[in-house]
Image (cartoon, rainbow, N blue to C red; front, top):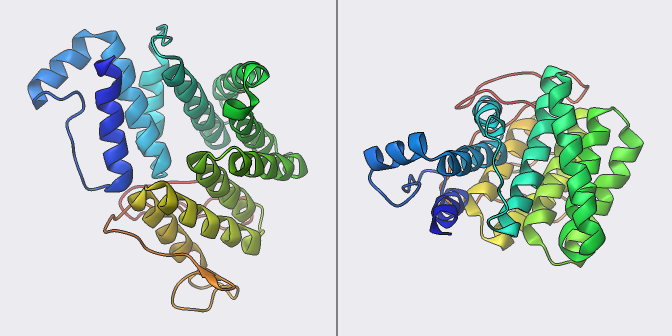
Length: 269
């Protein structure tokens, strides 16, 4: 049980302050390395949390590397149902992003399996899982370039997250919708979703993650005619910087081609 919770604590801390480096399992460095190398369950948990943090901070290379390691383990993760669900959910979102970058069908299949599992769980508990299913559906439609279907799926994910009081799901759904709309050239809509994601991440308590959304919007929209203030803003609802994190940010050209640049690492939609 504690083997699952210690890395989760580390992940939570990183969402609050990206510069913090808490221990992964509560031991000193060498002892943790031995545990990861000798215990497949610990290794799976470690690579999942590394994949998750890289995903949340849009570090594509780090995420893809951790995902390869994570999917290399064939283990039953049903020790705790909530952990199994989170791993299925995040690994599905990761898989669809990697598929859009590589066109490797194995990643699409992995994402599709995650979506099918979430649909099955949603049949038992719509309150907990239906918004997650729709976000996976949105990312699948985005990957298939079914843009109208994707637009509706993002809307469903956001609305259900709000109705079901899942701030983290609402924030993530808004953020991914922002990347989607920016990628298809809908910059005004993208900024609206980034603004909402920024606010919801802060309300959730993930201040460093909220700052990463601010940095993303600042980089993307600083030269845009729809954002001519000193900070990105939609109407009277500015995107705000919270805390002192310095996260990686993501660029795109808004026309379906990715302009890979660097801040602290490469990243893409």
